[in-house]
Length: 434
Image 1 (cartoon, rainbow, N blue to C red):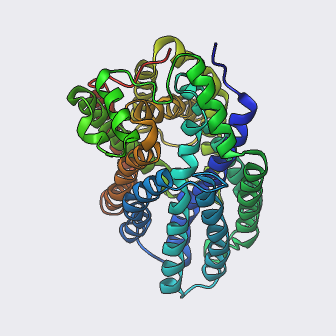
Image 2 (cartoon, one colour):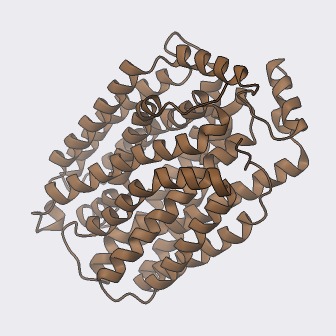
């Protein structure tokens, strides 16, 4: 039996990730501006507050990822977390924006923000883990391309709403975020409702497992004997996947996770600070930064499916290395940019392609080295390292922006991206795709 990717079902699964990205695009770009312009905080303090999300994520994502591995309800393993997290997050998001519209209420704003971040942490790992749960292992890179495409659609939606609903805000301290927040919350709820109505998690998991077994494979698709032993141990309830992992596989996993940390440190520095960078260095105002990021996200949308095909031909690792190299070159070119131009548009398009090449393949490589019974846990590991990067990078880059120069942004990104290329060269496993 030949395995084929169910594109329609994968798109529907992607609505969970689209909901997440719809919110995070707002969070990364507008929360720093609210902290700076509404509450008058400096870059260092703003970076510290932005990093609190990632500090929470270091604990929440592995916790809820592992918890969802062990839970089994009539709605599935992941769905209850997605529903509960979305419900809490949208309510707290509206409360947050009402508080943000009144300067001088910073303590209350911070409390609500932290509660909101906890709510998002409840369902991020379970939402991402749903794809490998319901997709045959050899098809996960291509499926992940679609999942990331759906996430990018959510990001583009938010950027479009920012350009539309914030463009007339002349006084930065009096920006009304209520219409924008309402548009984002509606999109989040609609996305998850579509997911809930169309995806029967338990039924699909059983069907996919039978298809994989009929093809002579397993949902683990282990690429070495030690991983197969780990799968057997997990089924027997010993839960010693980490201890039974082959040392060479574990070494590859650690280098891959370090690479994740490094390229997220580079990329997050740019996305978090770019809305202020274009104002301070390039003189663009009133949400104009969204046009630059829109180019990158549109380029990613166009690239995701071709990259899924390319990775099936040349391998996941090589595709990632190409993406990291292209992004490093663009960060280096950004050092010399003095304003927005057609060259900047091309640069951001290439960044979008590079980031797509990384995202399509890095998570499937982590899952490839994991056990089928612990996908949620390894999803948590993946996000632990990406969040760890986002703990220190807003603080470190924010201090450089405030106390050295805004022009340190692109050199900072270039250094970390180049280091990611070096560590990725050391990865030797997770690239099997039959």
